[in-house]
Image (cartoon, rainbow, N blue to C red; front, side):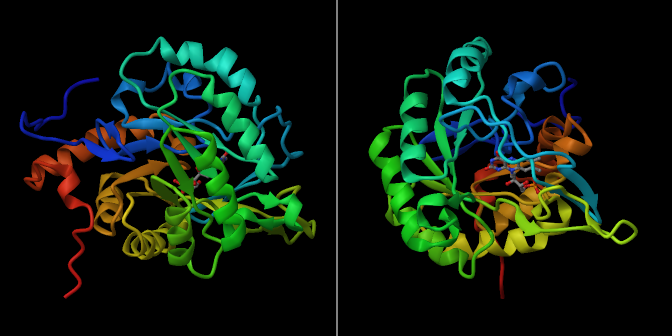
Length: 314
Ligand SMILES: Cc1cc2nc3c(=O)[nH]c(=O)nc-3n(C[C@H](O)[C@H](O)[C@H](O)COP(=O)(O)O)c2cc1C
């Protein structure tokens, strides 16, 4: 990879979130970057701020039947169904390979259907070396409480975050569901229950129908919407959440270029994640790091972290 055309020696792209130093704020989002290792041949992993691995559960999961993906206007629907190899196989098979790669930050995304699922998954992952932090995916139905999403019920959210906090010394990032009435309230609940940072947004519940066949485009009927279509809503939610908490916010939702990153940082994000853009171009994350560097040089921004929360509203 050639250096950015106007690379400046004084340029500092680094950000600190939940006590972790990232060399830049660009993190690949969970579910769109495999276990990281699969991207080794297409992306210089050490060039990214970090990456979040596919959501891990206590047992392996097969996921939903196809079709599971559908492209929409400026977005994508997915109902992968949280397919994964399970926490133990991640520790045994993927982590040793990741540990061989220098200078990377690996974040483990964790999910479950009961409080005990989260507890057990974290206990398994605690045994694995080389995980910088956990990201709790709370956009899952809580089967012990009638299938309401952990992340859309303040009491369930409090319970699951407190459980995770109790089970690990590692930094804890809580990834919020956007399918709520007040994102500010959920952000605050996560903070008070012990989160070191929050990340948002996960996908929006949505659907698509084929008028000819009169069938849903996705076998699961409903699916999660991501990509540029959700960006303005995600940006508003990051802005609302950042105002409600003292802990750092990691923003995501439709980010496709460096300017999008600056917008999320102005809204209050300390770092950002890139998901769907990696589906359109597997090298997107790395290219956007180059763009970000150029943007900072062109705009004479020497310390990128200073952009966070810099929105001018008058
Ligand atoms: C195919 C696919 C799989 C995903 N899997 C996960 C997952 O396992 N855990 C999770 O927390 N989020 C998952 N997400 C959500 C993304 O990490 C991200 O929050 C969302 O897509 C919004 O960002 P984007 O618009 O940049 O894609 C998934 C998204 C997609 C598109």
